[in-house]
Length: 192
Image 1 (spheres, rainbow, N blue to C red):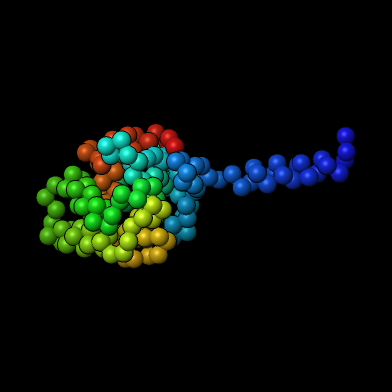
Image 2 (tube, rainbow, N blue to C red):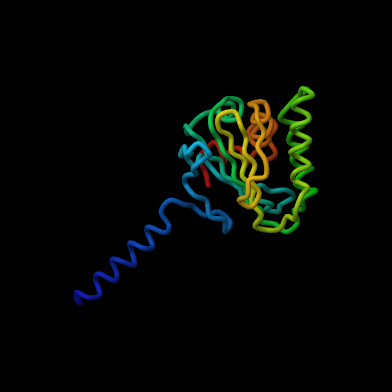
């Protein structure tokens, strides 16, 4: 055995292990196992999955939570810190389609919203109309301390106060009538 080759092999094995440690991959999208939010809290990956419609993969989404293993309501309808990260995987998604899908999701996650909440929801849906969407566009919705932070391609676009908005937004994927039942299951079962 050549003693000089052994350290190179060990170094290479260690490098491969360290670069893959701490993240998963789904449909070509890298999914970190943790996310640091706006309050410097480390959120844990609870699950990830692919949003499909008519047999087409639209995006990969991952759910990060403060305390793993809870029911859906514990995540979206409480004051718990939470984040959802979305990366589009289809060039068929447009800003108009994303905004429309969010509006449809709001209608399913919120019944009889107050006029104040309706304004917040409309403003958010209109924000999604700005800019171009292409495969690889990312959206991150992160809730901490009463505020939902909205990021598009890593740039903070706005923040919306209120637990009511948080429940409506995260309810799109976690309510009783989610956008995609299989994605909700993946979020809650810790699958990816």
